[in-house]
Image 1 (cartoon, one colour):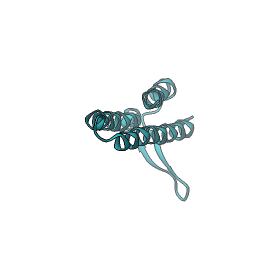
Image 2 (cartoon, one colour; image 1 turned 60 degrees about the vertical axis):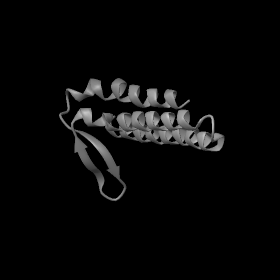
Image 3 (cartoon, helix red, strand yellow; image 1 turned 180 degrees about the vertical axis):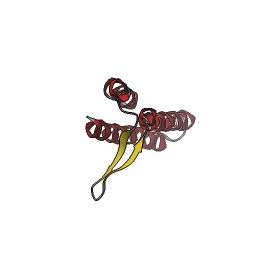
Image 4 (cartoon, rainbow, N blue to C red; image 1 turned 90 degrees about the horizontal axis):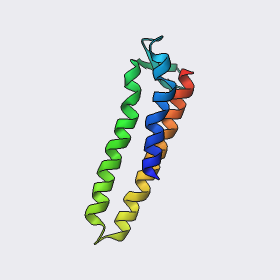
Length: 101
C-alpha cells in the first residue's frame, strides 16, 4: 500500500507539473492561509516530497525487516506509520498540484 502511495506521489508532479514547467520558471511550492503563496521555487523542487517519501519508505522497511522475527508489534507500528506518512505526502502533493493549476 505504501509503495502505491509513493508511486502516486511521484507520478502526479510528472503528469501535471512537468508539462507546464517550461512556461513558468518558478512555481508556487507552499500556500499559507494568512499570507497566500509564500514559497516559490524551480519546477524540480516539487520532487522534494517524493524523495522524502522514498527515504521514509526505505528506512521504515529496513527497520521492519530487522525486527520482523522478534518484535511483531514494532513491525506493525512501522508498517502503519509508513502508510500514514506516504498518505500525508500524497495529500500535500495534491494540494501543491491544485495550487499550480
